[in-house]
Image (cartoon, helix red, strand yellow):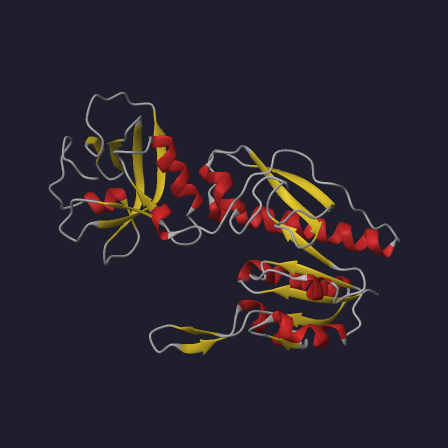
Length: 312
């Protein structure tokens, strides 16, 4: 049985640790350090650390990975598996296991190299993404592939529905890679195609502008941000200007209104808003200081009419 080290931090990495623990002998788990959480700023262990301790596995959470390379080497592991660890690996860490480190990445490399491949695939309205298992080197997600599996993106998909699909597909890729290695097949295939990047998402990218963005751009941004920090817009409401948009739909309604104006209201359902190009239907939202609600529920009791300038 292979001896492995697992590198990962957030909840998305937990299913991979569980699977790796079934397929191999996990001799060490490496995570990010505990971070302050909540109003009391108490230290909270990351999801992978919590799961590793639950499984009875040895865990380290170094501030600087380079200071713990010798501890990793001392485990004499055959292979390292990385899923959303959150730090860059330098050469000493890459050489800390016999065969090196292999990363599970949620795109069809070389497209969407970087920290947010799922979000950018949705931002750009892609109809297909995938999972890549690749051997890490010192470049950004540019190592040779051990496996690449495609995944369609459905029109109704957003980050909340796409991540689970990619996790399942990633587990299939991990099973394949482990089986190949156990059979003596070390697959290293050069990445081919156009390189695109998916860097970390900034706060500025979550702000929607109905004056500057088309309905499709806004809709795809909402889709891409559905699983983490939601997209928001500045709205003319008594609760305040910040309003998160949780679910939207594209509309084929034609309008000559100005961007930000409400084109039409469907009571108990939602409302249509003119964008720079096209009209967007608002389904679910979160007003400032309120809980998430349907747009239909939000309209109840409010004096909002077609023609009102609702969004900036």
